[in-house]
Amino acid sequence: DILALGFMDESSIHYVHAVISDLIDVLGPVPDLARSLGEKPATVHKWRQRQSIPLTYWPAMIAAAKGRDMELTADQLLSLSVKAHEQV
Image (cartoon, rainbow, N blue to C red; front, side, top):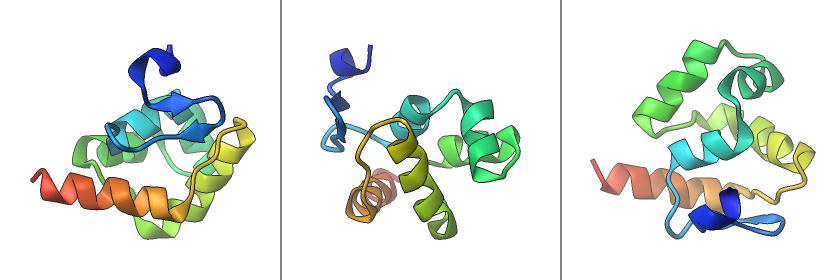
């Protein structure tokens, strides 16, 4: 349950404790997310492993979230990306 993860509260994605892999899990399953982004599942799996989503896919990720009645912003994606970079 996503609410139990503390990652999502109602329709807003919270990124305080989240990482990129959490976001991909919430928007998945990976094959469905990849299809909605026009990518292969292996590519999305690599993003999950790297904890990094290429900037060019951010608008599609935001749209994917919206299609699942979730709010995701570029600022949230940026925060997740910075957080992943800081953990390296």
